[in-house]
Length: 483
Image (cartoon, rainbow, N blue to C red; front, top):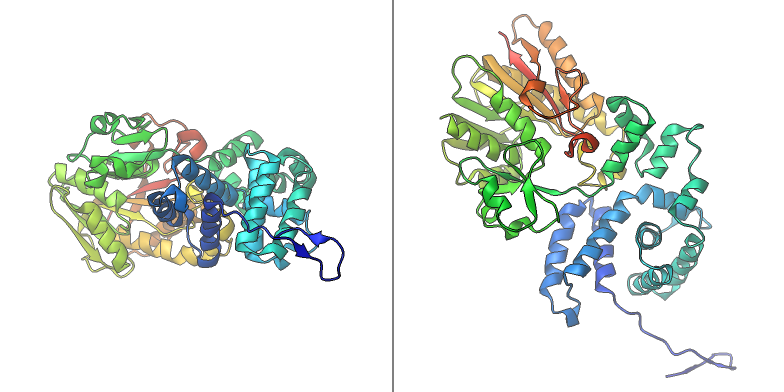
């Protein structure tokens, strides 16, 4: 129906309802959950996709291709959030902090389609404006349209030439914008990695690649042959004898072994640090193992299976009751004796000197898993390190105390930040030296316990890297209690 101008004159255009695009609406909902609830995309997105795929296509359901596009829009937008913010800031007439967060999410989705995908410009702008009309209203959709038109003036490289300083003038800020990492994270990674521009560039680029899904065939319960024989584009892992990589993505839950708990999703770096602890030379008894921070249970399930093959028992401790239940679920069906307790590792419920092998995978900033949780790079702050520091040191001290004389402790963290790795280990060892009545420990060279894995540095500790090893940036230090 045509409408007449209130002031007379030509009839106005008939109002057209916005077209609802289920793919982009779902992507927007996921971004809002990440922003409003501090949720993680890898936890929020799967249930949204599952619900959408169960719908009839006529009612907004998604097929496999739609789900893949929604996934790319969410992860791609989150991964380059800081870079897109810098570009959007050049295209708006106010400070970015004054742009409403939902509007900024829509703009970021549009920027990613324009600068980070092969979607044609006109289609990216049109689809994003339609999304804005649905979720923001017609008034703010006009603002979105105007900003996106300005973004179309250049491609991503052209925009980066505008917003990033030259490398020679400010290397860290240049890399931060070109590779979408906060400056402080670039600096921390570079300190831990060492080397020049080529090395840090390779690491940052690897952080921006979507990782393959990696499975673990839990010893005694499943085999890699079973998993690779499923026809799910699965191939053996690079380093762990129990790892299988799903090279084309795929849905792990579709595999019988995963549904039955005989196999699980587990990064190969996570498998390697558990195997290193299990394979560390040990004199005397080898019957009691402890996983001090076991949630959600991936390493505990692997350790439990390895322990069972030697007749050893595993105690898995987790402070949070709901995470302790996840650990019990992961261990369910494991051969051999195991038990789970809800306990704080800094206030142990076990007697000192009780265990032959101890794993302490401490809470950390998670900077080693930015491939999997791209939003974490923008959420974390340098001051978070100070919050984790006392806990990490306290847990490692108690881990050493829990080991018997001659027992082995694996200090593990999914962060390469030196403040969470070597600084923690060095501080605890120095502290133990100052306590003549307390336990003592020494570092053990962990490198021989990762056979075939290249680029492990000078030791005795080990830092894995995404660009070198195809794993998360897991850190491992092995300590032996000496008294």
